[in-house]
Image (cartoon, rainbow, N blue to C red; front, side):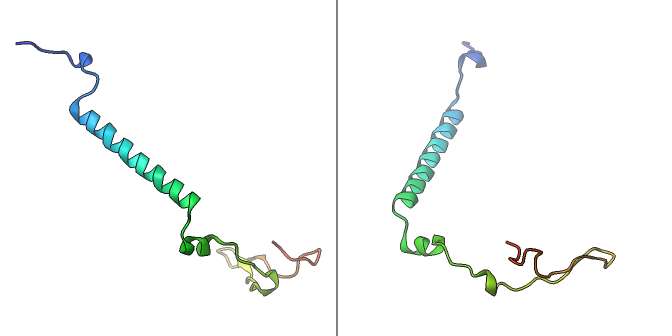
Length: 85
């Protein structure tokens, strides 16, 4: 009987199939990334478009307290009058 040591066979059939299927999956993901970057859909453009935020309309936060109900921070105007951002 002719036995071949494992070291002489660097890759088996299962390993080749695994590497091949992972390569195909990575190429498919790369293709999708390129497609989205080059030609995004109208729905995606609507989602990622910048939306204006008016800081004057943001609600104020309540006071921050610790577990012993001690006040750590009371919401109020900032020292320079511009507010926190």
